[in-house]
Length: 265
Image (cartoon, rainbow, N blue to C red; front, side, top):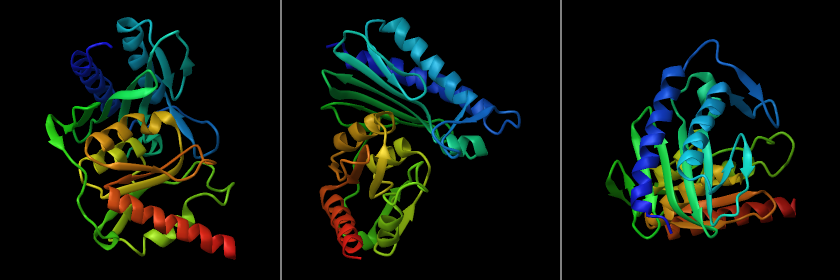
């Protein structure tokens, strides 16, 4: 395996470079915005420029590695390594000029995530993890929340782009959990949400219908910060609950209870 301790500073430096470019273009009135799968699934020219910068670096330094990127898809190589890239997670926020977005870069080796970086440029928060070495925020080790009761918790979640097309759209789960917790936040960047769970800023997170680039780095951050992950739906792409083991299970119980109530109606 390549030396991940040498790779990580390279990726941090890359994330800062890309994040600086994103900040410089935030709030531009002439920003080019397009729709993808639906009218609420957006891509901007900055998403595309960010991905070009990240992929260009990876191809130059690691030309034999495979890549899976949100905007460009998968670049196959006969390699044990796979980079998973979300160049700008939180595009809707970015298109609105809202300063809540992040860069997510993960590396898999033989199908297992071994390195993860989530960078929030506006807040200058660099979340990093190497498998087996813990999770860090700006070089300081972090850990998940230790809360044990849902009523004490602030959770994070999000809603899928096909929210109007399917009943499995998280609204029912939200309606239940918002009444059982201190608060539920909807930040608009799943990668950032997961990083904040790893740092204990959020006590837990759940969401459905995510893609690998949304969660690859963040899930490693959570587990390296001592957290747990439950996959709770097989029919909605990546659907996960994250937090400490107790809160994960309590959120899962509420979700299962909601499903049973809906099935009985």
